[in-house]
Image (cartoon, rainbow, N blue to C red; front, side, top):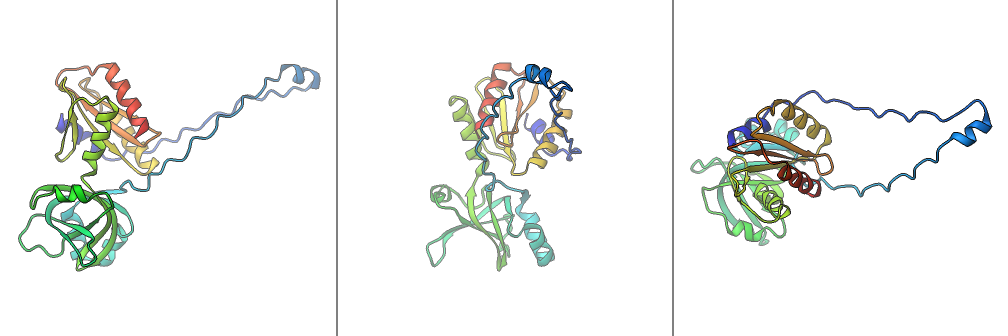
Length: 259
């Protein structure tokens, strides 16, 4: 399943399809009396849903090696690509320390000895417990706002292993079964051997392109793509034996809408 999910999520982006809404037919009549009698009462528009805040979601997902190579090669170009953007970075844990103001930071790199520079991630409030659980050399994923190069590549307001947190939210929304397992792609392993990997994005255009492309490629009944335009999240579902039960697909759809 992991190979299926990875393949779907790394597809080249498909061309964006713009779907226009047709205007309702006019109820005007040349005879005012007829128009008055035949015109239907316009339905009261539903109140607009509160705007969702996607500002904490990544606009880029890269490896620590890619970020560090970019900054070592050309800082100006790297700033144009990463600075002031929310970026998801995966790599190896270096140090977990505090600076002179007692701010907690985690360094993330490739695992090479005496690596300079590294990604230096200052963790967000509430992430102290997650930082304390890290061990040097293990795989980690962080999300934060890139602040540029100052000896290290500084990243602010970092969340540690966000995919695991997202997976746990999906597990709770489905009623608590299964276990979240981290890897290159974090997935919820259900008791019936179904696996569910969830990805959320910040941009509607990117969401449309990825879901369109992935949907066209999902032809195996052992894999299914479920997406929500409300949350801009998608779930890749796969099982050893198909097809995936429709009730589970419906529950995942409902859960995605609330993420």
